[in-house]
Image 1 (tube, rainbow, N blue to C red):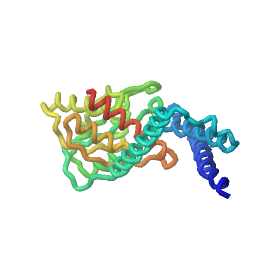
Image 2 (spheres, helix red, strand yellow; image 1 turned 180 degrees about the horizontal axis):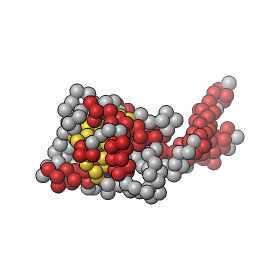
Image 3 (cartoon, rainbow, N blue to C red; image 1 turned 30 degrees about the vertical axis):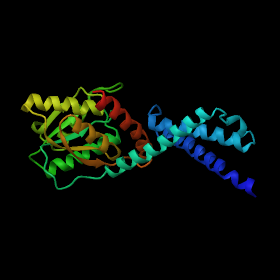
Image 4 (cartoon, rainbow, N blue to C red; image 1 turned 120 degrees about the vertical axis):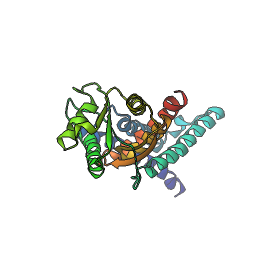
Length: 263
């Protein structure tokens, strides 16, 4: 009976592994970018968990044992640190994904998220639609559209956002373009430079419109470049949301080290 229950963790690991693999297959089937880290990570982890579980369930778990106590201790420590940091950062990301209300700001920022040629994908459309809604509620507010031209993009994200805003009744005179950035850090850095060139300062209160999972990192990088940030979350397609939150964990770590500490 005891031996039977010892197999439970391996069965759970196998189930989780299969879920990770199926998650990748589902997203690939629905046209997600399979090179996206948030899509690939569950696949890689799923394959590893499945292989380990199958080996253990087949009675060959001894080949997975690490005999060197130092290496084993280091591996366990790394796993524990990863799990704790993942839970902590994901908790902060989730807690930061709500809208800031009843605040006065100097500018609205809409962050880009990629184009398909000149077409605006659903994620970016959701962001711009939220921006349109906020600009209609605040008719005297200027908006900064920020995003450069990446691979397979016929125009810059900023240009696409500008066209969409104008087509939805936002006067072109209210729109400021930053069309060179290729990352969230550059969104904030280059937008700060654009505003400084226009007004002589960059220490503005800004309302950032971006996807809910992206708000925490966007605000963090905005503070780093002198802004006082607030946020409005734009919805993400439900089937993409879990992978987006997973990817954002690694993006936050990258931003803390490379975009802030080493900047």
